Image 1 (cartoon, one colour):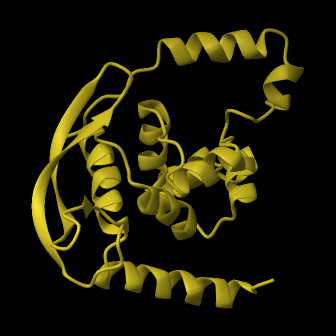
Image 2 (tube, rainbow, N blue to C red):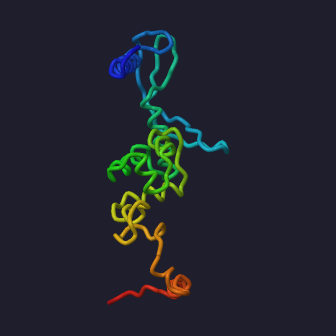
Image 3 (cartoon, rainbow, N blue to C red):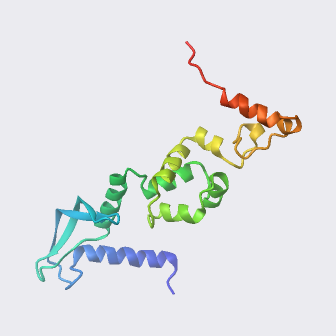
Amino acid sequence: MLDAEAFLAAALEDAERAMTSCASCGSDKISEVMARQDVPFGGKGETFSVQVPIIKCEACESSFTDHRAEKIRKDAIYDHLGLLRPAEVKGIRLALGMTRKDFDAAYGLPSASMERWENGRIIQNKSMDTLLRALSNPVTAHRLDRRQDPVDGGSVVQGRFSALEAKPNGLSDARSRAQSFHLRAVG
């Protein structure tokens, strides 16, 4: 059985060989051209075009694309939908210094979903993308962290308000005041 390092080296060697010879016939008479290619996405037959490298074989006249074209196509889908790319999703989590398990505990985003988004196996929806973008701001991320003690400036969403609960009508009075509260611009 190959260890991880040997497996990676073999995969890189295969990728390099694929770049210098035809995947169909093995000929080294190949050339590369850039061409527009339609990318299907969504379930409604929608497509859009992207420029990708296409490898053509002079010997057998076959043409094929490699991992570079696949990455271009995937990135184009994220860009077309206006969503964060997998590396950006992972970068947000790492910038906060969190594991996927920590991220789940802090923000309620399951680690399995984060893993799939970070590896590009599934695309996050717009709501989750918006939350991830908000979490890219460290101040916002800290305020939304469900693990924080509300007294220490963390989230009040998960907090208990024992002082208000101890008073008769304390919570209902606080809710009433909150509904009539308005911010005013100063200056």
